[in-house]
Amino acid sequence: ETGVTQTPRHLVMGMTNKKSLKCEQHLGHNAMYWYKQSAKKPLELMFVYNFKEQTENNSVPSRFSPECPNSSHLFLHLHTLQPEDSALYLCASSPWTSGKEGTDTQYFGPGTRLTVL
Amino acid sequence: GQNIDQPTEMTATEGAIVQINCTYQTSGFNGLFWYQQHAGEAPTFLSYNVLDGLEEKGRFSSFLSRSKGYSYLLLKELQMKDSASYLCAVRDSNYQLIWGAGTKLIIKP
Image (cartoon, rainbow over all chains, first blue to last red; front, side):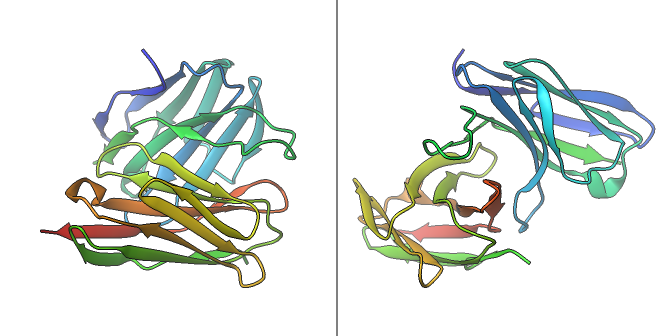
C-alpha cells in the first residue's frame, strides 16, 4: 500500500460514543497532521506531530485526543462529540523541515467523513 | 489576522482556459501551494511558488506576485476531470500553512 491511508472512510456516531480514527503513511515521512474540513471553510489544522512528538495543538477541545505511537501511524480518539464536530477529518504527512529547507509538501489521505448524531 | 481569499465557485467550458485567483494577507511569507481536491477525495499537491513569476507544469501553471500578495492558477485545455475544488495555501513566517476555503470549479461540455 502506498501514500497515506485512513480508516474508516465513513463513521456515524452518537454523542456518547467513543471511536478512533486511524491514519497510516507509507512515505517515510517524519511529520503527521490532523485537519478538520467543513463545507466551504478553510482547512483547520488540529494537531501536528514531528518524530512522534506533538508540536502543535491549535486550541482543540479535549474531546479530541491524538496519539502518535510512531512516525508512520497517527490516531484521533473521539469522545463525547457534538453535532458541530461533523466534518471530513484529513490526515497528512510530510518530510519534517526545520522550516528553511525544501517545500515541505504535505500529502493527504482520503479522509474520514464523520457524522455525529 | 491572516486571510486567504479565493472565489467560492467558478464555471468554465471544456477545452477552454480558466484562471483561479488567490490573494493573501499573512504574517510573513515562505511559499504558496495549490492543491486539487476532487469530491470525497484527498487534496493532491499541484504546485509550489516561493519566487515571483510563473511556474508551468503541463496544462497547469501557477503565478506569484509577493509584492501584491497575489497568486493565480491557470488551467488550459480544460477537461471534465478538472472539475474539482482548488485550494490555495500560504506558509507564514512560522512555517504554518494558512488555507483558503477553496474554489469549486465546474466544467461544462
